[in-house]
Amino acid sequence: MDTEKNNNLDIPERLYRLHQLMEKEICLQREVLSTLQEEQMCLLENDSAELKLVLAKREPILEQLTQSRDRRIKMIGELAIAVGQSHLCNKLDDESSLGILLDCTGVESIELLLLRDQMLALLDKMKALTIRNNYLLESKITSTKDLIQSLNPKPVHPTYNKYGTQQSHAKKTVMMINQEV
Image: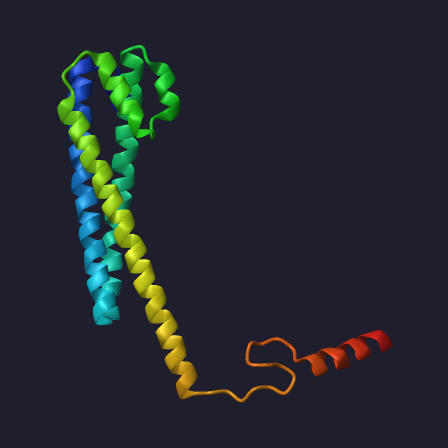
């Protein structure tokens, strides 16, 4: 029924609906960015309990963001069909297609382009913060492994060196046994 309702919308109504969807998506992106910043603080403070809460809080926001993005892409597709630019439906996730499409509507669409730019800027910030958080997490894991290793050094096994590969005399013995069998 929602699809039937959308098919009956004229171009200005579709543009207004697209504007609403983009604003909603920007709000959700800001929420995700906020949780990424909270995650960074948890990692810096070694607060694993709070980190679990932050990750649990982010999960439904990401689901909403995905749904919002899907609705926006669908609306752009409907708008493309409405203005006779159905060939743009093939690349709806390409951000340049929105600019081309808005040029075809003949409507002053600077605000939609500004929203698109804002979405892209937030996406870049989220990517950068995700990379930084992953680096922090990997660093914490490595330092924890090193600490555990230094607290509990294992004796080096006679057939394996400290890197876990067989020592040369052990390799020769294994090769001789394999040849005899």
